[in-house]
Image (tube, rainbow, N blue to C red; front, side, top):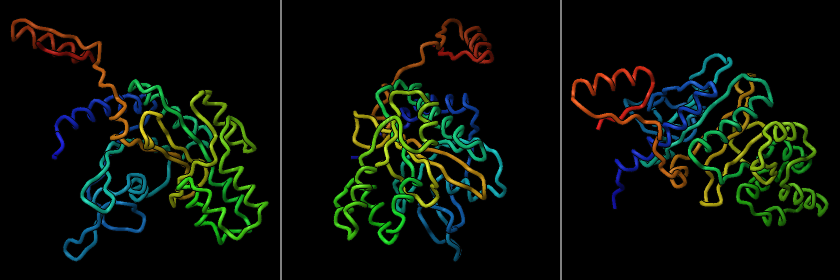
Length: 295
């Protein structure tokens, strides 16, 4: 059965209205990127095709697309709302931010607060954020690097049995088991402790079992969950671009749509009367930034 495209679009429009407002309050500026890019190894996801004997990509991953188009690294705070394809014709709508070239820890704190305040602006309060670290795991697997792929697959699948079957010492397995199951407000990694302390939010935890092994992530990563649905609301992480540190995330708009209650803006001014005078008043109110509805 075909989706009710217009109803779905209306719902996403309501969601992105609140997200845009929150992103801009934090100082991010919207970036508009082309639908089609020339193929390059830097671009992730997207759907590849050939035109005039050249390879192109439709709707690639936005982070990789931004970095592919950014010639010189500099301090940038950007946000985007776009569909992303992953090899097929059906895509996923995403909204996210990228903070490039800021100060370490401050970037992580600000981006995570952007996540929190965005969800709250949508009326979504029942969520939690798990923050992990790739560096902690890279340190833990020193000496057993040949099993890196299997260990990260175990983390991604949340299946410790994959590690249990590896031909490594029981002592090392116990160390990995402790990391795999660690979740709390404080740990032995000062950087994460500073982030959690600065956020000061009961819904944010250090969770070393959380992993996002994408090729450009360098250390701190996170995922956002709600107990009401069985898939992440979004996630992100830290990366390095041409020597500059950066931090970003993306929301899954379809996941947010399942939680958004469709609230209507309460301060919209409703006006009625004679046609000319009504629209004259409506124009003046809009110029003042007051939302209107002509009845």
